[in-house]
Amino acid sequence: TWGAGDHGQLGHAHKFNHSIPHVIESMRKVGARQVAVAEYHGCCVADGGKCYSWGRDNVDAPGGSKQPKLPRLVRMLRGHYVRQVALGYSHALAVTRTGELYTWGSAKYGRLGNGASGGYHNVAVCEEMLSIPVQQVSASGTSRVSLFLLIILSVCPLSSSSSSSSSSLSALN
Image 1: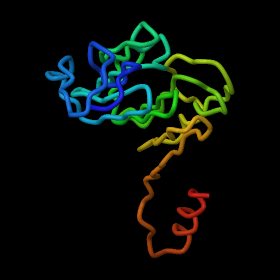
Image 2: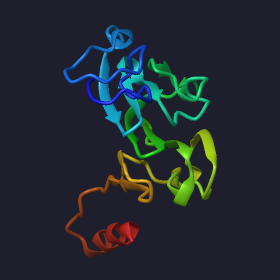
Image 3: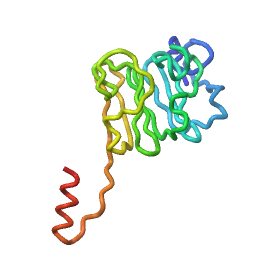
Image 4: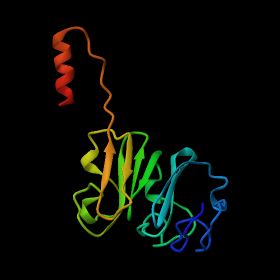
């Protein structure tokens, strides 16, 4: 990682800035598969679907302190195989292999998708999305824009009969 490190967002044991890449030593053997960064915090998915986070706005729950400088396992996602993470200004999103969406952090402007519009929230499944398997998430780095979801529905190919075509299409509406 490189750049500003004043909030622990680089994942090192210090808060220095770096103008060239430096290895996050604590992650060397973890096998990071996907990484998300925001202005003040970072998150990654490691081998085995484990999720790690670091920096500011980690919401006490994931790492046990408000600003862990070193990556820490997001304990509240233990037992869930995380496939992808995304970060916004002060919130985080995680998608599991089964399509569940977990959110945590600041709920300002409703950005967690759980009906809350303020305060900080621990890691929790987004119950409003349980009936729809989420494939991918993205979050904005600005403080006002919340999250965008890419939801890919599995649809059986349309058959040549009109009755099955119309029923398949109505299932999409």
